[in-house]
Image (cartoon, rainbow, N blue to C red; front, side):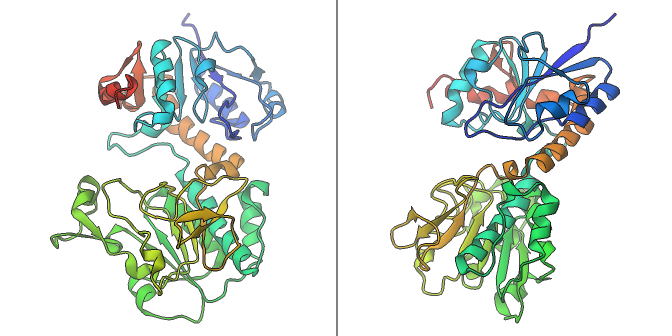
Length: 406
């Protein structure tokens, strides 16, 4: 008789605490029904959005010591000292882009001969991501942008998303507000931008094209979402091609500036490559016709394409004021000359139950068949950063980073 695979769900150890879970109680039940060769154990936690009691109510086993488990899953990075040697781990490791703050984590993973799978690199055969929280970042980021607008103008007040029970309550709150004649701009066309649009569409406001947004005035609030062809152009006049832009961003220049002269609220949901052109420079904020008062930078590239994103903000303190004269962050809502910025870098954590349920469903449907069965399509292989105490071939480029040479 083949021995069962033991799957452990670890408690989150990163600070500030993250309440999300990789699998909900009801999804554990579905997992064991679909994969009878798997037993699941839950490490107790007092910070999860799903309580220990919600797991035990369904007769799921809580286990403090997960050393007997074969595979361990969480959401954010596991503390190096908490890692168990010779296991398979799956979480967002944030090492594949050579993040300096996680070099020690990768070194410990190698030292303990851990097989590390990273959610970010679980992709299909077309290299498209299978699981992500980006949609929920967009949903909450757009909501926070509206919150900032209401507070800045004293026009309305919205409850923080993390104080809402779920998305339904958050969306219900939007029904009570009424925006004045304003222009809202969203950049991007992926999961994040679609999440932002889902939130903004709760307001039932008119959606317009980029040309209308730039060149017409309206007696009502309007919403516009633009793709890269509206904010960059090839330096040599080549016709825009999205895939070419992704591969050669350094060949493009920004044409975003006209949008800064007509937008009131800017919700940034684009993908940005360090070689891509900037959206808003420090000098742009000093233009007398610069009009944007609220920027919800969902993408949150610090010191990146939007100069006012000088830091990541937090769920507890989501807003700050960007002083265009000094280029520094100040307390929010203290000066009308400042730009109100929202740059929370873990937005899905504000709606942890909704985000966790959606994420867990994607794992259940699209990842676990390969993890607990045959990985015929290479989903697990492509996401495996380390194995047997070494970097895998796909991630061999991390060797100098691992060795502390860069």
